[in-house]
Length: 236
Image (cartoon, rainbow, N blue to C red):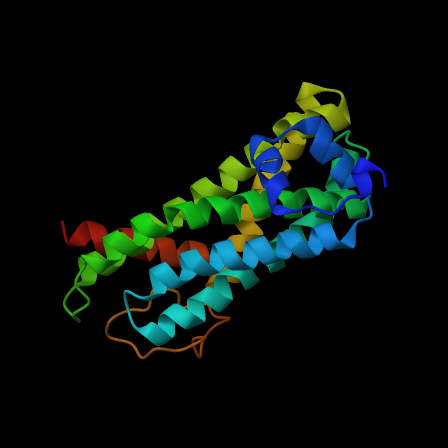
């Protein structure tokens, strides 16, 4: 069996985390469906662990809901952004197929899920020591913004880790930068809006625990972040 056709196993995760362009470049050209399945399992477990740590601030049921929703958000964002970049990459000078684009984006989300899993103990400690009373509005806003920052960091770090691979595939550093920027922009806008539609995550203390809000498709993520920052500043 050729190396490129071998399924990804846990011993190959360090290779992915280091962003070794030669090895993961071969993976992006292979047709090993078991590797895709394994990456989806890693995303589910890593993002699920982080989600459970965040959701436990509000309620055990919210913890379960978020352990389900966060992997779903990452998977949907990876699928959507993989398709978008499959169209944009050739226009930006990187000649890859839709399948390669999906695999590359999926790799980055696998890295992001592992980063989120590594933050889980820190987030759990922070939440364990934060009050959950209905008057703890500042605590809610702080936890919300802290976790948005952690998720954003994981996404950016994971994408940047694969820059060497984009450079190798495109053969030009400027092309790789353009594709990386398009990649990050797609993750931001698509992932943020999917997150907004699948809210709540932490859950406001004064609202009931729900899997999704009744007005799930009203407004945008960016409007909500502005209101959160505004609310936090008024309490300083």
